[in-house]
Length: 139
Image 1 (cartoon, rainbow, N blue to C red):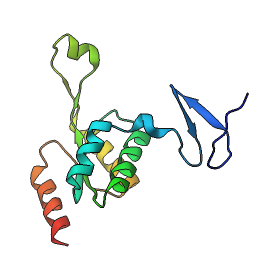
Image 2: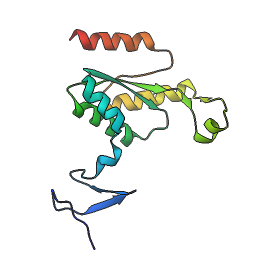
Image 3: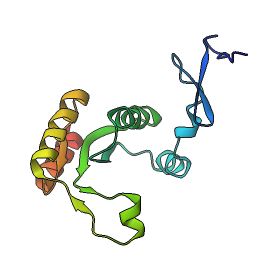
Image 4: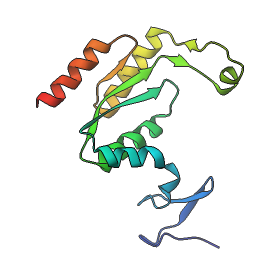
């Protein structure tokens, strides 16, 4: 038995517990962070600084950017790349997070900036990030 999308009549693909449509995305409610969604709707921010982990998949980051750019009138101003790797086992065992090398962070930041056209910051680039935020709100 094939399950079809009611919107486009295309086949639905099972992903986890949800079904998704390849052309119109029906079934993505499982990806919505409900508490954060309510917070965004309540505050209607003009811009977002998206913090991502070094090992986050690019399709996940792209979905997050698209979600944030479409939920309210705000947009993703910049991406901040978290410079530590924390796996669940280390977290449970209370081990120190692993610091990711700067050259790896720099390469990942360049890759993300090229792909998404959004400035990417990491490590101690706070003054550059603040300047980007100020420039965004001065426009």
